[in-house]
Length: 289
Ligand SMILES: Nc1ncnc2c1ncn2[C@@H]1O[C@H](COP(=O)(O)OP(=O)(O)OP(=O)(O)O)[C@@H](O)[C@H]1O
Image 1 (spheres, protein in one colour):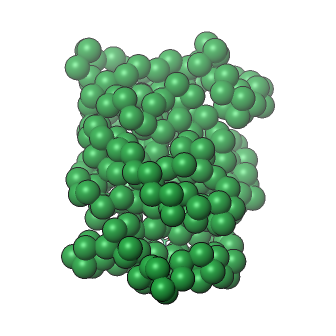
Image 2: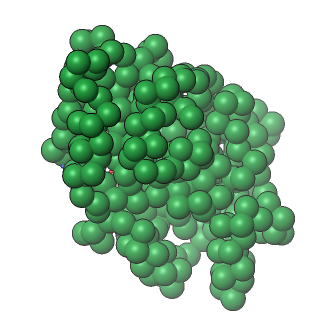
């Protein structure tokens, strides 16, 4: 069996020593042909994966967070080669959604079991994403996170607190196959998976294999409600609040008054005034538990 491992040395701000030891121990040369490459810069994981696909490997394993998984998946979407995951990021949204967030040893076990399942992926203005993408507060948090100069869970918390005091909601127009609506929103999230990562469930109802995109809108709320909304996010209770609405679509267009921040699998991007998001049903094979 031929396996390509793509390791992001900076993801999650964690050393990858333990995972390399686990790979050497659990994939002996007598049984497996393994290649290990470290990413050196952004988008490098896609290049490494493209080369591995040309060499017809049996699986490409992303060792990192959702950003690394996204880059690896970009070269696997639509192919028969499955994505393996050793979760080592700050948020690990996809691994958590798939109930695969555990030790490297457990992740290795899942890879060896070789149980590929097809999941949906999404595209926003031609960029693929696997978990969530969106505008508003969460995009603003991701832009502060990107500027922070360090990663990890604590940096997410710090960026979120900072954003809370600086952020102002915007008005958006949403066009879907069911009609058009205009609304002021605290955030608009396009969810394929149920969570942003770190068990922050923006779309607890989202199913990554159902062929639908969940559009989740949080309307502006008084600042004193923030602790309650934050708690609801982690307790999967957001759909019960009056500030939350969601609907399922195959595609959606979002229009806003100015270009700005967009988050995409936790990474920060700047996109124009118009966004088009579509679902690509069952387009990626993933090794699951
Ligand atoms: N050697 C490198 N130096 C700097 N950045 C890198 C390097 N290799 C990869 N990257 C970039 O690191 C970014 C972050 O990776 P990743 O998302 O896996 O970690 P994370 O943000 O800590 O975790 P999560 O997405 O789960 O919150 C990716 O966008 C990737 O392009």
